[in-house]
Length: 445
Image (cartoon, rainbow, N blue to C red; front, side):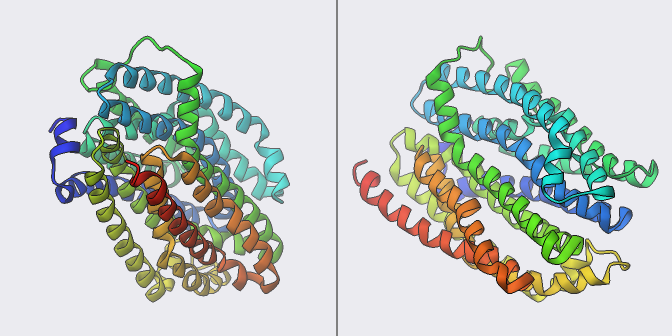
């Protein structure tokens, strides 16, 4: 099915299942790999390596966040330009964005390679914990010019209507990364650096496979001689800022949280926080895959002036997000011990005992978190980056940091409640933004 037929003429319900379901499956496969990553390291290398991985992960994600900024930031104007029937402008933005992803991977990866020891010491890491975390970060830093393209490529495939291709690439990536990590840790018996190397090799293979149709000119988006302008750079940064702020601010919050937890509960508390983040990764990747997969369709219809279809698509997106989130709350509340045991070896009873009540407090996050997340995705899709950025920054940094300060006196139990309070405040903010959008833009359109 070509792009116009899919985005403009397919019924909203069918479009939802054709776009959101494969996107969710693809992101779920990615989150399951991350789950396996934590399981392999926690079960095979022990608590110290698992804590090192969780200390390093925010810096790894910051590295990828800029690639994601460029990918999402270019995908929004590309979709809108295609809806406005301006394909050459779309192709130029696509070409410029791909070159930007590679360039930033070299710059940011180089910085993290050399600066990671200092950054981790600032977080409180020392000794063996510091050594393991540096090893993990440096593997990702060296490979980032190639692995960063994975985040942009996914958006471009969906814009071209290759939604199932995107899904299968994510599934294959997860399988290849898990296989690579298994070979490194179980067969070759490497350390934590082997876990990172196995993952990066799987990502690089999928980048080459996914980009091949673009290099061959088989898809709607095609490479052109790049023509960089300030307007293009500004537009990419402007549209990608909400996602970037969410990634960066979220990682800054994670670094702050890890620093506080090291002081309040030691390495065991950092490991428990890692378990919460892995559980969150599964739920949020599913939500992200669903909402992000619908962004090209929403942007295309917004550019084509089809507000009725935009509303119909978003109704289905919000409803599905609510059902998924409530299901996640029920499962985590009912089975916290089973979730914790996935990451905790039998030799770590203190971590397990700490993780069970933490998961029960944390799972309440999803009662309201879907509201803010779906609203942010919608604002990004219709080029309302200011509103999306306000919501993103508040959710990822302002609210959680304020709550860390407020809840710290209550000890670990208070800190585990941080994300639940953040989600509630974000939901209120999202409702205000939606009402303002309806008044200022919807009626005017």
